[in-house]
Amino acid sequence: MPRLAAVTLLAMLSMSGPQTPQDEVAALRKEVEALKAQQTAMQRDLNVIKMQSVGTSMLEDNIFTTTDYLKSATNRDTAKRFVQASLQGWIYCRDHQSDCVKTVLANGPALPKGHQAWMMNEINALIWPASRGIGVMDPAAYARSAKIVATYGKLKKVPGHEAYRTDIEAAALKGLKAAGVDVYGRKWHKLNIHVTAGGN
Image (cartoon, rainbow, N blue to C red; front, top):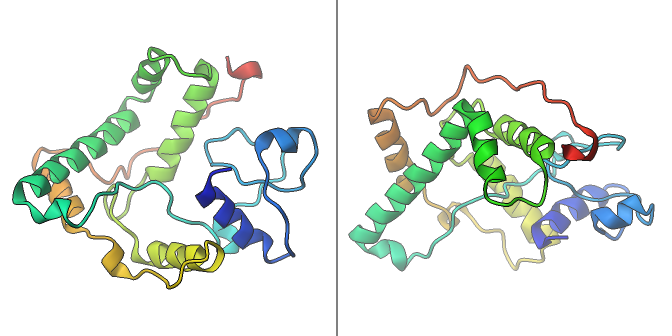
C-alpha cells in the first residue's frame, strides 16, 4: 500500500481501534477487514466508507517542484505552461471521455476497456464541477490533509500554507480563460457506466 494511502486508512481506523492496513489481494483472500482504495477502484460487493464522510479524506494528486527551481523567471514560465497544459488535458478528457479512453488503450494499459471507461468517469467525477476552477487549492482541504499527515505520518510539525503556492496555478487558469476554455465544468454530468465482467 502506498504510504499516503496508509496514512488516510490509519486516520479512519483510529476511530475504532488499531488495525494493520494491507493490500487488495489480502482483502480478496479475506485476510483483512479493511483497506484503502481509490475512488477509481471498482468497489462492487464491498462495504464502502467514504473518507469524506468521516473527516479523514486527503489531497493526494499534486504537482511538485522546489523553491530554488522557481526562483528563475524562465522556470516559473515553464512551470506555468506545464500546469496549463496538464489542466487542459484534464479538461479535454472531461469533454472527450471516450477519446481519452482510446488513448490509454493504445498505450498498453494493464486493464481492459471496460475498466478504463469506468475509471475515466470516476476521475472526472472527482474533478467536476470545479467551483474554484480546476486545480485550485482548497485551503481547508490542505489544512485537514496536513494535520492528518502530521498525526499519522509522524511529521514533527504541521506544514502551513507556506508549503504550497497558488500563483503558478492562477497564471495557468488565466491563460486557459483567455483562450475561452471552460475551467469550471459546471454542466458536466457523470455518465452511467456499468462495471463489466473482467473489465472488458
